[in-house]
Image (cartoon, helix red, strand yellow):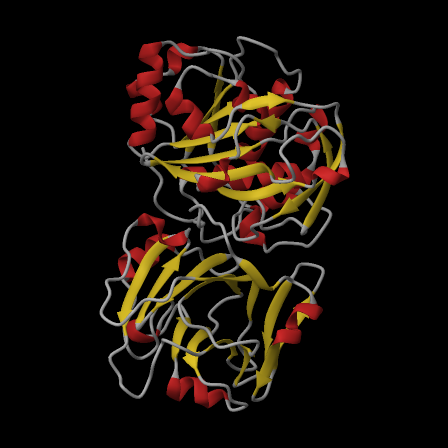
Length: 462
């Protein structure tokens, strides 16, 4: 069975089990597990080095399942890898497997499972597995090369929109065995966190050292974390929540943008200092919380706009979260002004409001074009959880991606407006509305001449 729905309410027992973590607190729904009725299989067969943390990992995942209402089976028997048996599971967790653990028939069954929409979660030594099986190497994202001694290190969280990292601080300090990999997965997977090689000894990836990532792979979903060598990892609330978030995404219980991402420049990095390039138009404001790197709307009707320069062709990415039935939006293509209504009258708003009419709801080009609501609903995480927008402007064409899924494609034909040059801004709608933003980043795209075709395809998020 394949997962398709999202969690709408919190599971109190799961929240209590995960407990408090160091760093910023996340909203309750991010602490719950896959929805009741889902099943995951933990596979921990080893044909090489065997980690003594495997029993702790199995116990931790079973505890998360018991608290969150999802079923966990565990096996080291490769005979479980048949098409019929795998079809009962929403994800298979490869827990510190090593060496060649499946025969050719079992490999074929697992490939078929992934291609039909199955989920994969790789933990630590899952990257030290099946070196002669190219499909598995692509699914895991990278193969193990070497490791130094267990030691503390700083983990830089690159993406807070994914449920595996939404709860973590910008720098996550922890002790583990830090793998070096034979290749860098950044070009084919979406990196969620990387190691600061200056914070420990023995890193060998020239300063770009991914340690957790996700990707859509040949029809299925793949999440990998390099952490989890030690027994202590599975007693660490922050790591357990990291692992649970990866499981939630792999089974389809949470949505996130896992397309590869390169070439973006932060224009709000979670600090008040980064707002020097922004101006407030109208009443209200957006409040900075440097503890969790967020901007939160206060009052209105106003807008915080990026005044460093006008933009032409670009990709804007940001994470946003609604508290409940709230209202906000992202404005594009408007001239500089201290009047927030100038953006309304001269630009376009990408709406954030889940309960309005189609042309004025989340993902719409406000008042002009509804989102594809079926696609939007499949991609949208509920209030209390983070979502990621990519707003892509090329010429007069504007596309909106929600958690990696294209939900709107609009072309401006109004001679009084133009998307070819203008500013971007974030709306603070009113006193009753509370929407938070973080990780705002920008990538310039090649300018398109009038009449030239717009690029298409899944590579739009690169």
